[in-house]
Length: 241
Image 1 (cartoon, rainbow, N blue to C red):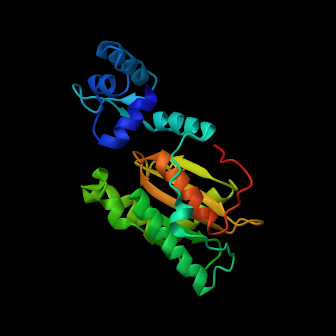
Image 2: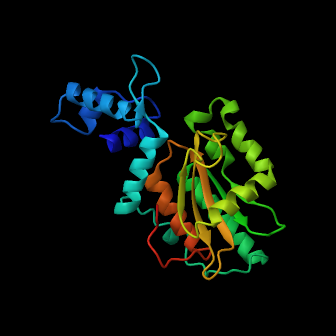
């Protein structure tokens, strides 16, 4: 039931009612039964009703349960990013023009594929942080009011804050999904980040996607993994939680 709620909210960007879930996901179950189940999800903190008469939307806790299940089961769509980008040899020479061109090409692809903001960060580099996809991100329903994107814009302009964020994420030494930007003291509570460290022997960089918590995790996760592997990400383990 929670997965159905998340999937439908990702698609519609509007509160989801019991009738819609019954029609699309549980045709043999009554809307009344589904309504009761949604109430249980609300009581457990996995969903919330933004208005008294409205349907429900997932909370960050609800997203976390579904994302953990996706990662454990490998339950996501393969977007075939490698096939679309071609076979580019991995390289750790981040100062080379060829590598920078590859980064820009891949970031552009990731943003176009996900409709979100993609970033590439290198530890200790003075070349700054590459990013693509602000127009795509601003086209998401959550950001029709431009004030909603201000916290992210401030983060992008704060090099120290970005370095701190990526350094703390780099310690995971692997793939990570942060929902509601769980470690940013609520400043980016409406955003999520999907990121993969890059570096076969010693992690030295990171590819990340920023978007609303209502992102399509089944699409974003494999897109990030495939794109990062073209830049030298370790591929010796299954993504962890």
